[in-house]
Length: 613
Image: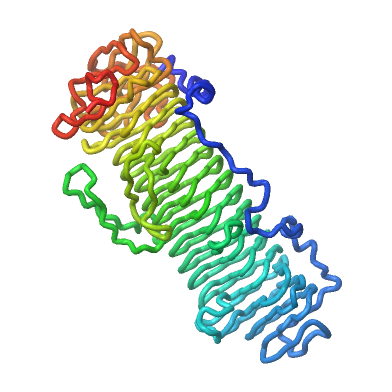
């Protein structure tokens, strides 16, 4: 490929399309995350880099849990319950089979855990019932633990319901370690907001690991959560300005039987390292293909329950600007009941359902996204790919623009969609590689391509196509290469402004067989599809009307192949299939696309690139 200026041309085309083509305009890119998430605390101490340095150790009150004698003031002891009744700083150490209770009448309380181990068989080991703000410091160099029993001596649905239970704003910091072993219900639960700045926190919970009602901020720390319920969640769905989650740092590991990280409002991630596993992982997703029509989708039998097992889930918007993510989820990896925007970060995703799903708009503005396993790779009623590097493998559609949502907010299962002119897939830039078992690119509305480099492999069955659309499909820039079966293959609309060449090979070629298209001088494109194919589609700014192009199959290439596309080196010609004159913007070769019985191909051969039925 000596003159395929794909990358540079694609970048230039993005700028031109932005200015001139409203059909290729992307959504606004990145949500401003310089302020705390709605519903999270804005106390200046919350955002301190090291809360431990703010502790007033000199005037702190020492609480020795091994002692039966209370300190001089602020603390009382009765029936193995240490009660803190006024604001101040308290350093807690020792072993206790009982409870530490904070009831400080709306005053600020600083609790420093310094080798404290508290076990309570019938209640919360640490219960913060009344304070203004509670600062929980895990002292550097110390190891601490909280453990409860399997039953509490409280009325059903009454407080407390967690090993560490707090009714006010809770801020956690320090450099020590805290282990929370939850055997009754939740492990850490705040009724207001929760902020975690630092600390090494290990949680094993029979239900939710970390729960905050009004808002949650994670700025740092090492969090390891194993839970039979959700891993980390906010719960306030009644107040629109509360219940959001903001994560800007930390190392977060979650293995949960339900959602790993779930927000009842927005979820904004601007940093951190994430290792998330939900359900039994992608390998545990149990869908049975139920298709009485051979290669066409007849329906799915879902043997799973209605339990939601998503990795990152938001009732509101889900925004990721940075971070490193390793995700193995039985349900969607990234999910929003509103919009998803990804503008940065590195993702390694294996999922039993969708890699990225938005009920409304999905926007990819950047990032390095690898989806190794999915039902559908990227999905939304509108999908905008503006930048970034994406590699995805899907058992069904690779990128799907279709309205609707999962079987419910908590639900789990393939989505069912209709057709609408509002649905759109717009590729404006970036690098997109798709390996699909169903349609590579699928829109129940329109597809527009005006920038970037897009490579589609698959499908191999004649019931799907490398790209499928209902209203219109236009190409005005970028490099677009698609290879797959010809049975239901579509070409693009005649409204396209960049030359497109569609070739029905006439027979099926084995995967990794090179197809080379050349004008013998300036244009040389060699591509080895990863899967069996009988159709090749190419659009490039270097294709020109009135030029003759020879199509070869087989042979070899001395250059380097990236995702099957060769650069540098030279092609040693195989067998000449045909020579085609690029007579129109959209030029097709072959007698028919096939379709069902050869009569239902969309945009069939001889249609001049139009839709056609």
